[in-house]
Image (tube, rainbow, N blue to C red; front, top):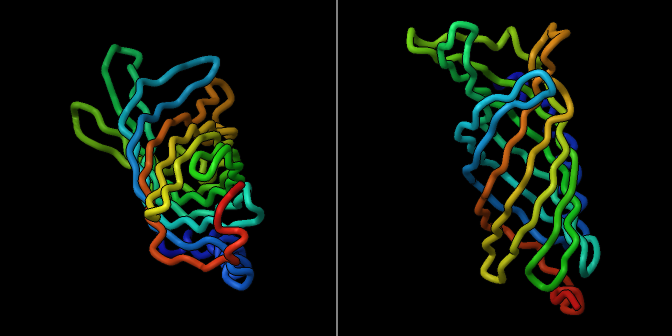
Length: 205
Protein backbone atom coordinates (compact mmCIF):
# COMPACT_ATOMS: atom_id res chain seq x y z
CA UNK A 1 0.00 0.00 0.00
CA UNK A 2 2.79 2.43 0.88
CA UNK A 3 4.41 1.93 -2.55
CA UNK A 4 1.18 2.70 -4.40
CA UNK A 5 0.17 5.92 -2.67
CA UNK A 6 3.14 8.23 -3.59
CA UNK A 7 2.53 8.20 -7.39
CA UNK A 8 -0.99 9.50 -6.79
CA UNK A 9 -0.06 12.43 -4.56
CA UNK A 10 1.92 14.95 -6.73
CA UNK A 11 -1.10 16.26 -8.64
CA UNK A 12 -3.06 16.70 -5.42
CA UNK A 13 -0.36 18.65 -3.61
CA UNK A 14 0.48 20.72 -6.70
CA UNK A 15 -3.13 21.87 -6.83
CA UNK A 16 -3.13 22.42 -3.09
CA UNK A 17 -0.03 24.63 -3.28
CA UNK A 18 -1.63 26.70 -6.03
CA UNK A 19 -4.70 27.13 -3.84
CA UNK A 20 -2.66 28.21 -0.82
CA UNK A 21 -0.60 30.77 -2.71
CA UNK A 22 -3.70 32.24 -4.35
CA UNK A 23 -5.66 32.45 -1.06
CA UNK A 24 -8.11 29.71 -1.96
CA UNK A 25 -10.69 28.00 0.21
CA UNK A 26 -9.10 25.38 2.44
CA UNK A 27 -8.25 21.81 3.42
CA UNK A 28 -10.54 19.31 5.09
CA UNK A 29 -11.19 15.76 6.21
CA UNK A 30 -14.16 13.75 4.97
CA UNK A 31 -15.78 10.36 5.53
CA UNK A 32 -18.90 8.67 4.25
CA UNK A 33 -21.00 5.58 3.59
CA UNK A 34 -22.98 4.35 0.62
CA UNK A 35 -23.89 1.43 -1.61
CA UNK A 36 -21.70 -0.18 -4.29
CA UNK A 37 -21.96 -2.95 -6.86
CA UNK A 38 -20.64 -3.94 -10.29
CA UNK A 39 -22.66 -3.71 -13.48
CA UNK A 40 -22.27 -4.66 -17.14
CA UNK A 41 -24.35 -5.83 -20.07
CA UNK A 42 -23.57 -9.44 -19.15
CA UNK A 43 -23.98 -9.31 -15.36
CA UNK A 44 -25.25 -7.26 -12.45
CA UNK A 45 -23.94 -7.66 -8.93
CA UNK A 46 -25.86 -7.17 -5.71
CA UNK A 47 -25.41 -3.95 -3.76
CA UNK A 48 -23.15 -3.99 -0.74
CA UNK A 49 -22.01 -1.34 1.73
CA UNK A 50 -19.39 1.13 0.51
CA UNK A 51 -17.31 3.56 2.57
CA UNK A 52 -14.76 6.32 2.03
CA UNK A 53 -12.39 8.49 4.08
CA UNK A 54 -9.73 11.02 3.12
CA UNK A 55 -8.59 14.59 2.45
CA UNK A 56 -10.14 17.23 0.20
CA UNK A 57 -9.03 20.71 -0.81
CA UNK A 58 -11.73 23.04 -2.20
CA UNK A 59 -9.99 25.77 -4.19
CA UNK A 60 -12.01 28.91 -4.91
CA UNK A 61 -11.45 29.79 -8.58
CA UNK A 62 -14.35 32.26 -8.95
CA UNK A 63 -17.29 33.45 -6.82
CA UNK A 64 -19.48 30.58 -8.11
CA UNK A 65 -16.85 28.01 -9.04
CA UNK A 66 -14.44 25.74 -7.14
CA UNK A 67 -11.96 23.04 -8.12
CA UNK A 68 -11.73 20.27 -5.53
CA UNK A 69 -8.93 17.66 -5.62
CA UNK A 70 -9.12 14.83 -3.09
CA UNK A 71 -7.17 11.80 -1.86
CA UNK A 72 -9.44 9.01 -0.60
CA UNK A 73 -9.28 5.47 0.72
CA UNK A 74 -12.50 3.81 -0.46
CA UNK A 75 -14.11 0.40 -0.06
CA UNK A 76 -16.23 -0.76 -2.98
CA UNK A 77 -17.48 -4.22 -3.86
CA UNK A 78 -20.35 -6.36 -5.06
CA UNK A 79 -22.29 -9.48 -4.23
CA UNK A 80 -22.63 -12.33 -6.73
CA UNK A 81 -24.40 -15.64 -7.17
CA UNK A 82 -22.14 -18.48 -8.36
CA UNK A 83 -22.87 -21.08 -11.04
CA UNK A 84 -24.23 -23.47 -8.41
CA UNK A 85 -26.35 -20.90 -6.63
CA UNK A 86 -23.82 -20.06 -3.91
CA UNK A 87 -23.61 -16.47 -2.73
CA UNK A 88 -20.31 -14.63 -2.53
CA UNK A 89 -19.04 -11.12 -1.90
CA UNK A 90 -16.00 -9.35 -3.34
CA UNK A 91 -14.70 -6.36 -1.38
CA UNK A 92 -12.18 -4.05 -3.10
CA UNK A 93 -10.09 -1.29 -1.45
CA UNK A 94 -8.85 1.60 -3.61
CA UNK A 95 -6.75 4.72 -3.19
CA UNK A 96 -8.61 7.31 -5.26
CA UNK A 97 -7.64 10.76 -6.54
CA UNK A 98 -10.73 12.63 -7.78
CA UNK A 99 -10.78 16.11 -9.28
CA UNK A 100 -14.19 17.81 -9.09
CA UNK A 101 -15.52 20.99 -10.64
CA UNK A 102 -18.16 22.59 -8.39
CA UNK A 103 -20.68 25.16 -9.65
CA UNK A 104 -22.66 26.99 -6.97
CA UNK A 105 -26.40 27.48 -7.43
CA UNK A 106 -26.49 29.70 -4.35
CA UNK A 107 -24.19 30.47 -1.42
CA UNK A 108 -24.41 26.86 -0.13
CA UNK A 109 -25.78 24.45 -2.75
CA UNK A 110 -23.42 23.24 -5.48
CA UNK A 111 -23.48 20.80 -8.37
CA UNK A 112 -20.38 18.67 -9.01
CA UNK A 113 -18.81 16.73 -11.88
CA UNK A 114 -15.34 15.31 -12.35
CA UNK A 115 -12.97 12.47 -13.14
CA UNK A 116 -11.18 10.08 -10.83
CA UNK A 117 -8.07 7.89 -11.06
CA UNK A 118 -7.64 5.02 -8.60
CA UNK A 119 -5.21 2.25 -7.63
CA UNK A 120 -6.42 -1.08 -6.27
CA UNK A 121 -4.90 -1.92 -2.89
CA UNK A 122 -6.62 -5.21 -2.10
CA UNK A 123 -9.53 -7.38 -3.22
CA UNK A 124 -10.96 -10.16 -1.04
CA UNK A 125 -13.65 -12.70 -1.89
CA UNK A 126 -15.91 -13.90 0.93
CA UNK A 127 -17.96 -17.11 0.79
CA UNK A 128 -19.53 -19.48 3.31
CA UNK A 129 -16.26 -21.43 3.22
CA UNK A 130 -14.09 -18.49 4.20
CA UNK A 131 -12.21 -15.71 2.45
CA UNK A 132 -9.67 -15.59 -0.37
CA UNK A 133 -7.35 -12.88 -1.71
CA UNK A 134 -8.35 -12.21 -5.34
CA UNK A 135 -6.29 -9.06 -5.92
CA UNK A 136 -4.33 -10.68 -8.76
CA UNK A 137 -7.56 -11.30 -10.66
CA UNK A 138 -8.60 -7.63 -10.51
CA UNK A 139 -7.46 -4.78 -12.72
CA UNK A 140 -4.88 -2.71 -10.75
CA UNK A 141 -6.25 0.71 -11.75
CA UNK A 142 -9.56 2.40 -12.45
CA UNK A 143 -10.87 5.54 -14.13
CA UNK A 144 -14.31 6.74 -13.08
CA UNK A 145 -16.76 9.54 -13.83
CA UNK A 146 -18.21 11.39 -10.82
CA UNK A 147 -21.44 13.36 -10.55
CA UNK A 148 -22.98 14.83 -7.44
CA UNK A 149 -24.36 17.68 -5.38
CA UNK A 150 -23.26 19.24 -2.12
CA UNK A 151 -24.01 21.67 0.67
CA UNK A 152 -21.03 23.74 1.86
CA UNK A 153 -22.14 25.26 5.15
CA UNK A 154 -20.69 28.43 6.75
CA UNK A 155 -19.75 26.35 9.81
CA UNK A 156 -17.13 24.51 7.73
CA UNK A 157 -19.19 21.33 7.32
CA UNK A 158 -19.57 20.03 3.75
CA UNK A 159 -22.25 17.46 2.86
CA UNK A 160 -21.86 15.63 -0.45
CA UNK A 161 -23.96 13.09 -2.35
CA UNK A 162 -21.92 11.50 -5.14
CA UNK A 163 -22.48 8.98 -7.95
CA UNK A 164 -19.44 6.93 -9.03
CA UNK A 165 -19.54 5.35 -12.50
CA UNK A 166 -16.50 3.24 -13.36
CA UNK A 167 -15.27 3.59 -16.95
CA UNK A 168 -12.79 0.67 -16.81
CA UNK A 169 -13.68 -2.99 -16.06
CA UNK A 170 -12.63 -4.34 -12.66
CA UNK A 171 -11.53 -7.81 -13.82
CA UNK A 172 -8.10 -8.54 -15.32
CA UNK A 173 -7.84 -10.74 -18.45
CA UNK A 174 -11.61 -10.66 -18.97
CA UNK A 175 -13.03 -10.84 -22.49
CA UNK A 176 -16.65 -11.64 -21.64
CA UNK A 177 -18.17 -9.93 -18.57
CA UNK A 178 -16.55 -6.45 -18.32
CA UNK A 179 -18.09 -5.51 -14.91
CA UNK A 180 -17.54 -1.92 -13.79
CA UNK A 181 -17.85 -0.36 -10.36
CA UNK A 182 -20.91 1.73 -9.59
CA UNK A 183 -21.60 3.40 -6.26
CA UNK A 184 -23.51 6.15 -4.52
CA UNK A 185 -21.83 7.72 -1.49
CA UNK A 186 -22.99 10.24 1.09
CA UNK A 187 -20.10 11.95 2.89
CA UNK A 188 -19.57 14.57 5.58
CA UNK A 189 -16.49 16.79 5.48
CA UNK A 190 -15.04 19.52 7.69
CA UNK A 191 -12.70 22.25 6.51
CA UNK A 192 -10.06 22.24 9.23
CA UNK A 193 -7.81 24.78 7.51
CA UNK A 194 -9.19 27.80 5.68
CA UNK A 195 -7.27 30.07 3.34
CA UNK A 196 -8.71 33.56 3.72
CA UNK A 197 -10.10 35.17 0.60
CA UNK A 198 -10.64 38.86 -0.14
CA UNK A 199 -13.89 40.06 1.43
CA UNK A 200 -15.38 40.76 -2.00
CA UNK A 201 -15.06 37.04 -2.85
CA UNK A 202 -16.29 35.46 0.39
CA UNK A 203 -19.95 35.73 -0.48
CA UNK A 204 -21.22 34.21 -3.72
CA UNK A 205 -23.66 36.52 -5.47
